[in-house]
Image (cartoon, rainbow, N blue to C red):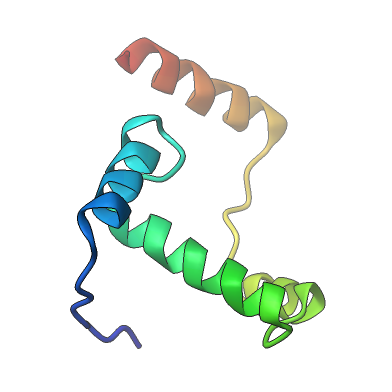
Length: 80
């Protein structure tokens, strides 16, 4: 379940988020902020890498053959 919150940022922090998105590290500022929170929690020992991988492993994965993966990548390349 997702909840929505508002975070007030300094200009420098906002600029950093925008740059992370602009250079392609994240698809959105929301994703960059979420990643930063998880990284900080991991650094503090609130989450262990094993716990994070366990949570990630619970998500449904797309079953794709190598042939389908190549086709999907070609389609993406042709979009640009």
